[in-house]
Image (cartoon, rainbow, N blue to C red):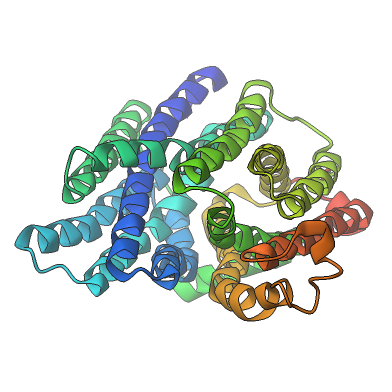
Length: 429
């Protein structure tokens, strides 16, 4: 590959634009199906199960997707993942078109589509290392996070508008169209740059997986950082699954939607800052400071019942996430051999997202049966903690956020003092 770095960055931007479009399409589907399922069942657990179907299959399969991303042209793997994702969408569309859709059909279709993301995402992450020099990793990471945030900021607004004028089944056709667009861009870029010859020893997938695990585990700093990230994602998973129920006890659905969008815009501003200016050094310091303030803002979400203050602290919390995510990604990317990046990123994704899965599984139980009862009008903590954060419906969730925020700030101090993680700053393969 003889292209100049700037030329390669422009090719990366084209691929990024395609992914940005397809992520919006995915967000349209998830939001629309969440509304549809909730209206059909009137249970929050049915909505949470959509999140589990979307998250669990790729988490389990990403190690295999990572092996394939290291064995084959990563751009072709992205196309394979995007094209495969259309199958689950087509299944749901056909069931709705026939008029005999059942809830399990929706769960099954989402699971099928999410399976193929196990092959697309590791290839996409590893492709950054193929195309770009190390000095542009942070900028690329910031842009990738910007694209991811579109699912939470742009998609809900678009879905709400579209569902008022078209039937939900046509949302799936829009999503399929976005996947076709992103695949076409990747194919076009591949034709310009040419294929990538993968020199890989002939061995079975299990041997490849073992190599990926060995590459991941050979650096104690990477292991420490990944495990820390898994713990952080547990707390963030509690926020993802419980923030809307907490807010619905304070205000209307319309205001909740506006608040969620304003909070998500913090991710966009933070990602744009990193995408424009990058972050070339001192990633451990940036990570520690960002995490410390993220914990403070996280706790702030539970300290007030004023929706304006909650929205402001939410905006600040989400604004710190791009700096946290970029620092973690660059520190890991610099310490993993390029030819093994697909496998290692898939293993890292599986380990870290385990925190989110556990959070989704326990969040409802903890809120309904442990924390909310403590802050009812006659709850055990009503006269103590309740005098600070309030009592009544949803204040137990608020207490969970306060505790989670405090733990997040404590984790930042651990990273600040961890010699193994500090060692990742200057090390490179």
